[in-house]
Length: 171
Image 1 (cartoon, rainbow, N blue to C red):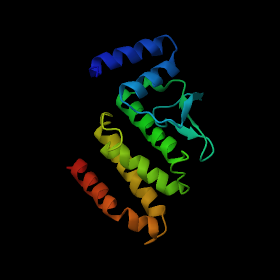
Image 2: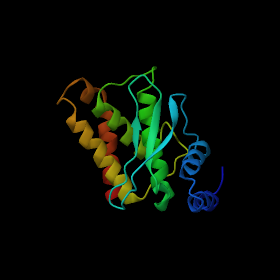
Image 3: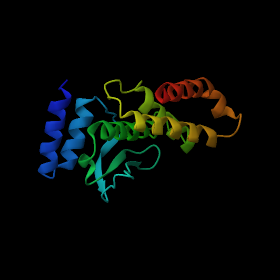
Image 4: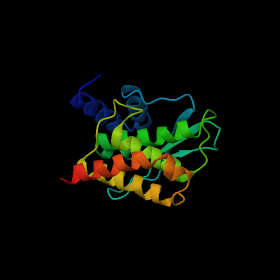
């Protein structure tokens, strides 16, 4: 695997050439973030520093595209690779093998991945501030699940891990 400085240099070259899709595909390859249900990259409006939106789009059971901002590579690569990993989790969840219907469960799983990198272990950590944001978003989606319902019970031990993760980051 390439060093961080090599990766940043490659991404900068792609960005300067206006090859945002190639940059995203490079990251997916470099960090082994792949799934057969992934259909490709499409673009959306430019992101602002306070709001960067990536989405996985397609009907559940069908191949998915990941839509990213045209200017995605103006932001720290650790954040971008975590956002790509988050969306690839959705690609997997929406695949014919899983077809996870509940949005709260999908978001819970994807935000947990951004904290712990269990499915995509090569993905580097984002900044401490961003990881706190991811962990709190995970809890937000957990709390949207039916109180004491099937999903909250299914993820109760993971919720404790997220709460401990937050405590550790806040030290």
